[in-house]
Image 1 (cartoon, one colour):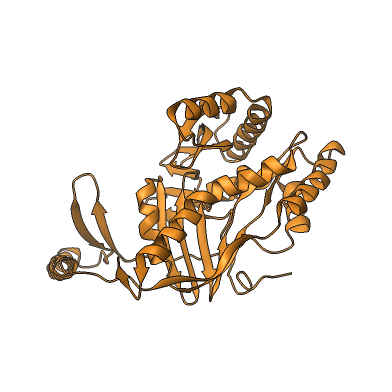
Image 2 (image 1 turned 180 degrees about the vertical axis):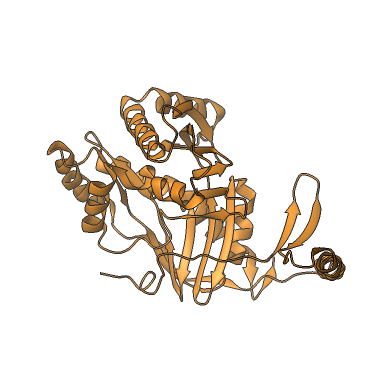
Length: 357
């Protein structure tokens, strides 16, 4: 079964990027790079440098002029795919699989849906204010996506690899005292600790498929990480690989993230397919880069909005374990969606006919 928003999406998109416009936020510098052939390198380099210098000057001149964003509007109010009662009933069914020993945990999604016109570029502009580690805007044909992901799937830097399980969620408090209370509740919750430890073990197992013998180690465990709308428990699992291990082999060992599937992965994904019924689209996938030196940095596709034609999807899910309570897991989905929903509402209020109000 497919939805209008996922019917025509490819499973994979790889792009060979030859030219990159780079902005250094720390030093406030703009640069333009391009891949060139090594044949007759000196002459090619000189010609390309001259061309890039001229292009960069033209870009800087263009950026000094006012830029109008394309219009954005919601045609239909946002609504959850499943209401709280329906979602809770499904959570209870999933818990029966856990009691039966089929799985230990499953991430069950409940996307927020709507229809829109215009472009998500204005939403991306709002998301940049969240200071998430990975922000992204992507458009190809009738598909558009904007992301403010807090979670790394996997990195490879030479022979060093790492994955970063992020599991356990609370909303941010309305006051410093409430924020501290919620942080303490998260850090001491037996359910959240058990769920997080399970996913750390899954990360260790994933890296173990490609790691050198006895090199897998947990370097951070259940560190509290605060974002604008939610807080999480985060860990880091690191390892070393042989020089012959490729970035794609590392990606294959860790994809999809256990924090977006469950444990064991294959069994959890089988049940996800049964209970969610429609493909997740970009949610739970990954985005990032593989470079020419064999390194990679991939983020998990969460805290995102994507559209196909006029169909808008803001996905999120909750980790279902044996003692999950349906109403609380429903609320966790909403907490995770809040930063995106707020960005959508803010973009709608600020952009009209392409003009920033």
